[in-house]
Amino acid sequence: MTKTKPYSVSRLRANLYRVIDQVLETGVPVEIERNGRRLRIVPVQAAGRLAALRPHPDYLRGDPESLVHMDWSDEWKP
Picture 1: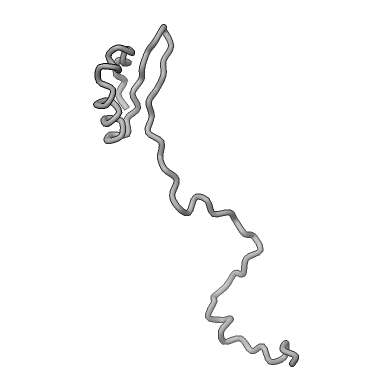
Picture 2 (picture 1 turned 120 degrees about the horizontal axis):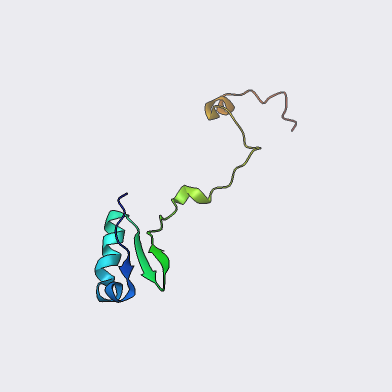
């Protein structure tokens, strides 16, 4: 990432929508400087649908087809 000169607040105010669209399109953060301190506009990556899944360590491992063809006659009591 190349270093660019940070935007001043007045320059950002004049070009706010263009700067935001640029950050969203390119993914490159933009820095703003005010009173000697810097802020950064950074795009946030949305989490995928699978990111909310929790691990289940006690799940059944193996081939599901083997369950279909398993002989349960010794285990089943009517």
